[in-house]
Amino acid sequence: MPPSASDGNNKPERTVFSTWSRIRERAPILIGFLGLIIVLTILSPYFLTVSNWLTLITQTSMMAIVALGESLVILTGGIDLSSGPVVGLVGMLSAGLLVRNHLPVLLVLVIGLLIGAIVGLVNGLSVTRLRMAPFIVTLATGAMASGLTLTYSQGGTIAPLPSGFAYFGGGQIGPIPVPVLIMFGVFGLFAFVMSRTVWGRSVYVSGGNPQAAYLSGIPVQKVRLEVYIWAGILYAAAGIIEAGLLDAATASAGTTLVLTPIAAVVIGGVSLVGGIGSLWGTLLGALTLGVLTNGLDLLNVSPYYSQVIYGLVVFLAVLLDAVNRKGKAQSPV
Image 1 (cartoon, rainbow, N blue to C red):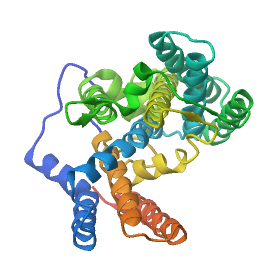
Image 2 (tube, helix red, strand yellow):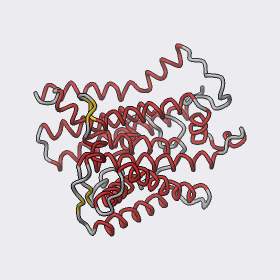
Image 3 (cartoon, rainbow, N blue to C red):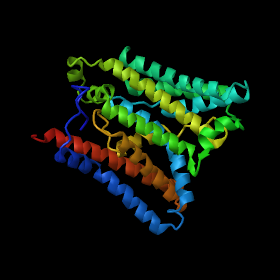
């Protein structure tokens, strides 16, 4: 259950019962994750190697960061379908500003994150002020972002990129890839904010019971607006990382980062109705999808069958979320 939003200075008491409840709620995804690792380790001698896992986590890091932004939106009861297009737009515009206009790397990074924030602001204002349906408005802004990417690139690729920019996607600190460090850094930061600050508690309450949140003095619409802005910034960060990892910006970048992050969120235990879930669960959900994709590639499974398996996993996760919500609704306590 989400932490209390009634008092920002008092930490909710953690009893043995509440701790056990949290463990029990996350047990299915953890068991599934470990089970998947065991099965793939048996089936492929290449799976449980350091090089493969560094590649796996690096490739998953972009999707995980996008899923983090999606989690924030879904926790408030919304949805965001502009994630992938924003990733592609920021990557393409950043590459163009670097290669065509020769702007400094630091300035391009700021501009890239600002573009994500602007898209998030448009989404947030449309949902909170204009009362537009999140599904429709984010689908529309995503379509516009994709159109801008194609218009700017003319369907082509911009490469290579300056080494200072590519470092954010392809660099390493010691043996650890930079994208992995960024992923754990942003998840740690937002997990702290969500569990230890008034704003984080307000996000949970705004999604779980918006009417009660409003009556308690929580600015629900303001919180939702801020969530969309932060989501846009996270999508932009993922776009920068992807372009750096590929050392190029392509017109098709981000196309797989729309439904996949939502799947990671649901698999990680965040309820689609809002107010319930954990960011660490989202990270585990993203890693589970990353392990599944990597394992299917190592086993040379046909992409056609991979899509079926992938869809089945997502279907089961959504079904489990629906069953859990129905069980809690019928529970007498």
